[in-house]
Image (cartoon, rainbow, N blue to C red; front, side, top):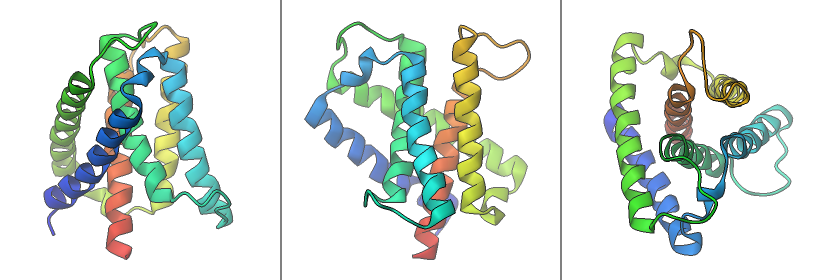
Length: 179
């Protein structure tokens, strides 16, 4: 299977979960400030790292589910970054899904460009390295949020969210290959 097909298959799973959550909760996350989105991402990635290090999963939810949540929360992070957060739920489910499709499309376009330049280096990486890179990107975004979303010479929070989406999708592709 080609990278594009594998990528699309993972995105379809992530989008399905996002749509189901929209039916359950609507875009209740609209009230989340940037640091809250980053902390949600942090707890997901930190849990994956703990399971990777200890081999113990006491909650029972899958690592794959956590990586799909990282994809979805990263898209939420992009929506919050570009739309701003709200004091109440101010967005329809349809708009939230439309923005999901826009940002996942942008992430895929970025992946295609980077995959070309880096020669699919991620295929030779350990899944645990992908987790560590995601955690690094989260910590970068936490620092950027602490700096009022200003950077001096680095990419902004949006670049880190896009990278987290793609690294989490790569992780999930690698997991599917080992099953």
